[in-house]
Image 1 (cartoon, rainbow, N blue to C red):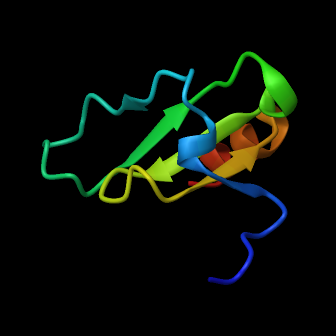
Image 2 (image 1 turned 120 degrees about the horizontal axis):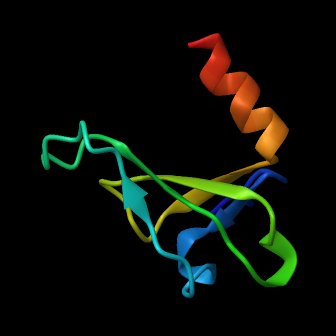
Length: 73
């Protein structure tokens, strides 16, 4: 398996976080989930993962980067 990008971590390495889905999600597992790690090296970042692959990678964003992404869409 190839290495994850610098801004990604395996979701399984974030066991203490609470993953949240949008209230607009239909429950069909075709959305993203977000979490805010509060401890460890990912503290203060926003983690985003694919709900279809909960054990897969989570992309990590700074609060500023995520806000910019959301504003752009």
